[in-house]
Image (cartoon, rainbow over all chains, first blue to last red; front, side):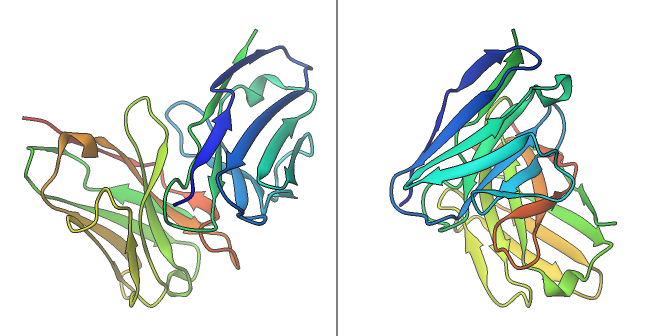
Length: 108
Length: 120
């Protein structure tokens, strides 16, 4: 079964900052890694799919990358609307963890 | 515009049953596999179940296998989740989710969710 380890669990940053969130898979998942943003009381929103492809309509300040089994979501020049919780998700296998534990991005 | 509207969430007793439904519109429902994802209060996301576009194949998380049954009605464009033998740990908001075209299990459309509370 695949285990997904997302870090950090929480993060404080200021408007204009650059932040990175990491997700590590316990085994190779190729590029089957996606990132979602969720705001309180709302459904998740797809940001990045296939590790680095930007979903239509998502601002270009969001980007994703992969190094082996390590995946990174980067947000450049944080905007007020970016403060939310972010989840990684592996879509390689239904066995084990599909979603990471989440990263709550808060305003410093 | 894709729309997914879940309903059926309610308060249920431990050991009880509940049936959730998701009404889909704005896309060719019969062409897409569909999924249920849940989120316990204050917790993260958990994939629950999936059904193929034809309805012939179903998949479940270990946590619900043998208790939950996913199904779909192509004529009504609805996705259902029959939940039996409910436990306190099934308390969550349940979302139906549609995959992105060409990408299994990449969810580009979600409903607003329906709350299931399991408590005596």
